[in-house]
Length: 243
Image (tube, rainbow, N blue to C red; front, side):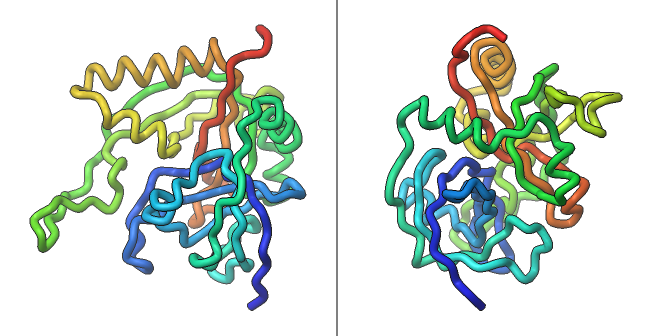
């Protein structure tokens, strides 16, 4: 097994889920290498993200190797003790330059190349919040509630199209669930459901559609690696100009 050390700009932190294999909450973490290649990193425990305060636009160094149990070409297994935060991109113009290097006009090219991570600038048509079938809450030995998917009972969905319509959205828009950790976490911070829905609608629809330049980081599910696309991260900046 050959390990390679590289620098990555973190662009994706999806909502954590419990890993039966590693017996920890894991975060689907994604980044872009210095040569513009996407990396899906695992295992990436939530406690490491919190302890090292790793956030979107941080630059990390990590040792990784090609995953043997995941067919997706961007997936990398990492050495946990090799993760080191070395820098952060703060400058808005530098961020835009990176986005411009990796953004795609549609899903067509990634699909043709059998890539399973990409970045697109969407045409957002709608945003909705849906109650999902909640899992049965388990109680741990110390009496605390435990959920394998802490954010799984509420689904945040976007209806959108590629700017250059792809094979899927040329006839009807995409409808994708958003698993961005920060966005799902935001929903839980309000005192009641009505307030949460109003705040999320304002933030995730009106601001994303009208006030900001918005990009969706997209990834596929390991069970259907070339078919089932999801929104795994949101990127946004104040509009430079009206388009």
